[in-house]
Image (tube, rainbow, N blue to C red):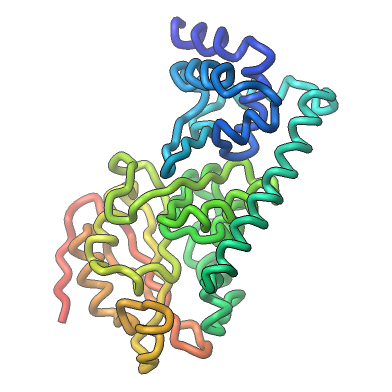
Length: 312
């Protein structure tokens, strides 16, 4: 009862209700919230601290910034917000300001990528069949599941595709520019149950277990240590959960190692089976997707007991 009362008291204040309403739609840093609400940073910081301490918001450091969003378990907040009138002029003004901010964020992030000559849409750059890859991934996953983790989430496209099937989704990426693009995409599409945060795929800031599905799409060929990346992905997967790797099969395009900074010229089934087996996952029915480059999809299931898989 004490925890419930603490949360109700924390929410029962106009500015804090506005903060909760905004953070239910996406992640915002303090400067974002100051601009939207038109209040000072010290004032909003005190409100945010109280909401975090009550468990109504979670705090996510990202470089010099800290972002705030609703935790996956914020059922009480959602029940409270459901009772707020959509037509409230103050909340409507906040939503409009947040939409303008998201659009500006996306523009800045895109400009930054263009200035630095980075082609952030690798599937398009490599002329890969994005629609066929997404269809194959959907076929490999259950029609509905609770929690998704997308490692190397990039612009958030895969989260957008899988959003209708999951109750909660988290994307992690090392690039702050990518995260800005992903936040803008998710906010624009109203995918409030999807969030992103900055993280190293070798040291995920997440406890053991907790996710029903983990995906790594076009990520592993950049990894210095693919086995370690897969072991970390498996660590946060529930027993019986599904880990799906989508990446290039072995190819002869040596130019990709230099021009696109790939560390690996594709992977074969034996490599993936060995790494996944060492991580406690069993490979299930990999298959290929035809395109300009060979793409392979490797689904695996987290075992309740260790499995032994030998690799060549």
